[in-house]
Image 1 (cartoon, rainbow, N blue to C red):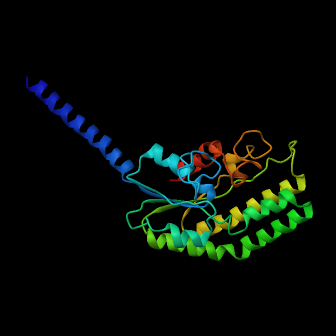
Image 2: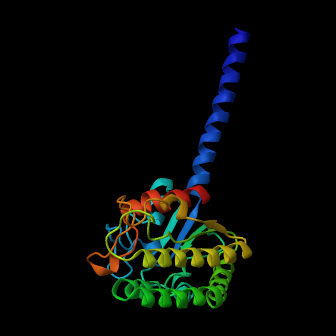
Image 3: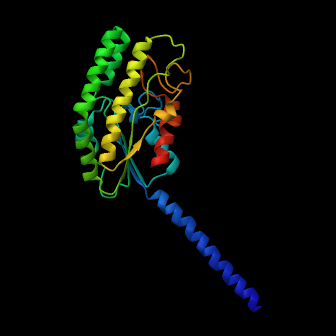
Length: 261
């Protein structure tokens, strides 16, 4: 009888310990306070499932996918199509506070003139495209760093305890494959621009102690010309052109955020 009582007591202790671990894990997951910042690549422009008509925030965007899969205790979706670094500072930081534990952001492409670069390259000559990309690259190297510094400083000031994951931009084209549309010169120059801006961003991310999320790997071989549907080419509505599709967010962006959050 005493042996049975001892075994019962032991079982109760083990059960209580396991139960404690289960609920501790649940509390940790639900305790995440997540704020998603950034531009159209963060809001989900091009991914359909829109929940507003101004910022083009989408339920298929990588921040919303993370929220759906991890059920954080709070979630604020601030990313907005067309945003530049000053828009983040002036309009998106309101929900951040000392209790914020996770921040994600994609920003900098609009500062460097991404939309105008693509318009010039689509409708202009090879030399027009090369010249416009060179201008964007010069801006990225010489003016964007200070803008990123100001943005990252503001995020840290508002959310001193948060893990900040900065996600970059994919290359636009899979090279060395048959591709109808722009010339090979334009394809290569546009991809070069993506590498330049990602290099600048990753450098500032490291300097601020944030986490760099490089999406070029998950998009590799799945860019435009690959046939995999991760990115829109010229499409209607035109504001979705050259943005990630829903697949681009779920298979290109989300795994990078999930691995680094």
